[in-house]
Image (cartoon, rainbow, N blue to C red):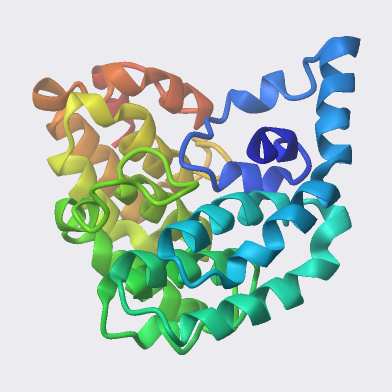
Length: 275
């Protein structure tokens, strides 16, 4: 409920969600009066809900603590609750010192990162899953290190998926989808992520259209393709990967909406002509 109620409050945060698609922007705000009233009613009770959840952030039971975090993270995305974040982070930091399991420590690192807390110590944790979860939040002073952690995880995406056989609370789909969206969002330019993401396009399959190849393409052309400007070497290499793997993966045919959103041709022969 908290996740749904928060949708639309922060467009930048919405775009970082692994399920976001460019054409969602065209439907933003398409609600009738009853829907808008229901959304506002849900937003209005977030403070009361968070007050009920907060005590459980200190629970010694890892299942209780993780479930509380699953509720607290989207609740604290409410603009009216930003002043509660420092206290929540303090409670979680105190609990983190006693945590030993990968799952509970990773969930705590993810929450702290999404709340914009300093997670630099967790970016060098011995557990790669904890390091990655500590890098999932917004841009920070140690952005290069956080991006490097995310890219390392994407070099072996199927191992990354295996870290959490049961998804963490608030993380749906394969974990690599969330890691990829965070890396694309954190990168200052496509060039920073090009080698790793182009390799993912080449190795992709037909089932990953909207969760991997499409978002990568859209990030490579943030302002849309303009035929008046020459392609960068990274953009050219990415489009070449799409063209070369089209027969095997349906990489262009299955991604035509993403190509359209990026201002590119929608069939293989026309994309090849751009190169």
